[in-house]
View 1: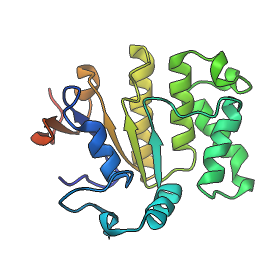
View 2 (view 1 turned 30 degrees about the horizontal axis):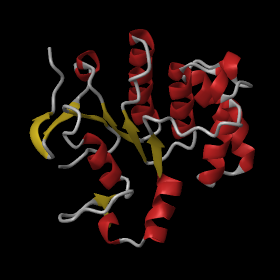
View 3 (view 1 turned 60 degrees about the vertical axis):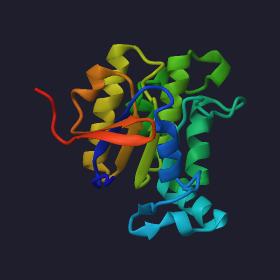
View 4 (view 1 turned 180 degrees about the vertical axis):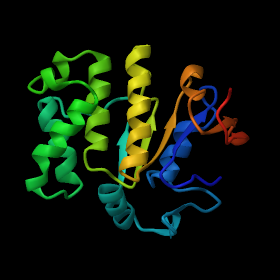
Length: 203
């Protein structure tokens, strides 16, 4: 499996097919029992945990199904926390935070904490936190699962804009056939195997 740089790639398949496991392997959260994984020509499967963590901190953004937000932090503070972890200079925070929050249309909720937000709004905060540092790679596990169809399409268009403008690669999992139809690159997984590789948009 090869994922083109600066592309938006989707992994699809039934629950238990291996989508989330594959994302974790690509992000260095799990180590493969066999095979090799290269990220920007770096064999990440051979790295120590410390080396792997450093790559994740600076070059990879994660959007988890569980959101992973800090409960006592506001929307703005959660996005800032992601920038701090990524080592982004503090003088760049204000503009990055503002841009990321505007991208996910949560400008009016910046002072709210996760418990004051709906599931869909929390998902959007997680997306804003991941895109703010503009990492080389974003791994998104069902990023539109909690969103209505209009917001889901907005997020996918935002992802496409990010890959084009910021030279970021995004790999996401999804069950939504409507979203799959507007993507250029889709891998289908079944029982831990890639059974289909869709390289062109469906008409």
